[in-house]
Image (cartoon, rainbow, N blue to C red; front, side):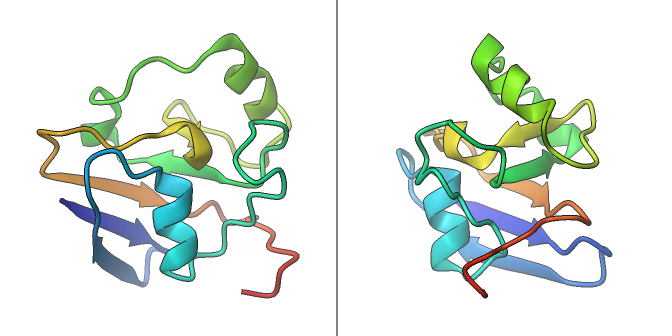
Length: 110
């Protein structure tokens, strides 16, 4: 399936291929996207916050209460914000588009 990463300023769209069962955070980091994932995907931070495209948001299962609590700590949260560590790509999805928030911070220097 195609995963589209839209830059914070919407100037750049980078498309990569991914497989069902892949975690979005892993796909993003392998592509060099500025998502730190400080907690290594253990859902203990909000450094992998992404904004899911409106047309793709309904594909996702609802966020857990714990994920919602962590999103409260992220900058520029929207109605379609999610943590990339909690999005597992599912069979049958042709594509998924996410935007990197404008205040994404990556302490790893990527």
